[in-house]
Amino acid sequence: MAANTAGVDVALLGTIALGGAIGALTRYGVSLWVPHRGDIPWHTLAVNVIGCFLIGVLMVCITEIWAAHRLLRPFLGVGVLGGFTTMSTYAVEVRTLLESGRIGSGLGYLGGTVVTGLIAVVLGVGTTRWVSGTARRLGAGDDDRIR
Figure 1 (cartoon, rainbow, N blue to C red):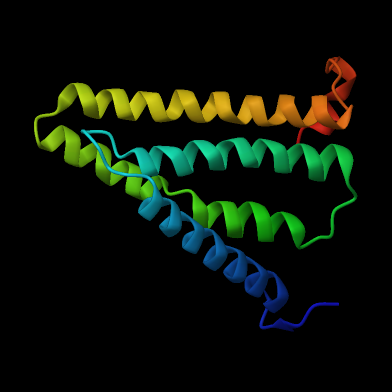
Figure 2 (figure 1 turned 90 degrees about the vertical axis):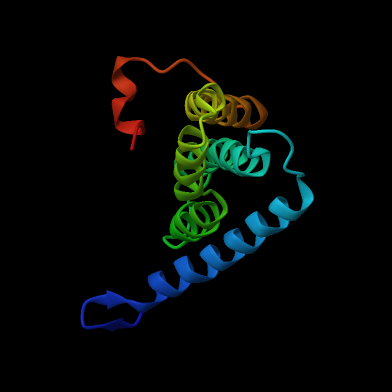
């Protein structure tokens, strides 16, 4: 059983913190690797779309394929992917584009990130189901699988 101090699950918080540090460092590495060209902050778009794809992969793996340890989802989902993706930076970048008069770029970046992120989640889920062999059509009786 995990240590619990004043109602706080220390193992859970430590797991999330470690994952968050790994995700944030990885995001920083991507920002150094992906050049900033033009109006669109491509490194932020890249990490958010990659993160969306990976959350789709993760959710299929831990809900349909594996019997996951209780700390796996907080470590990978909240920690690593939460630290890797950066919606706050995205919001600031959209605002900066709009305030600087680059309305088309700002609105394109705003909508494009949401659309590509949603597509990435669907692709992550579909690809993982296809690769794992768990792909099947969800029917009315499968509502309990959605968490």
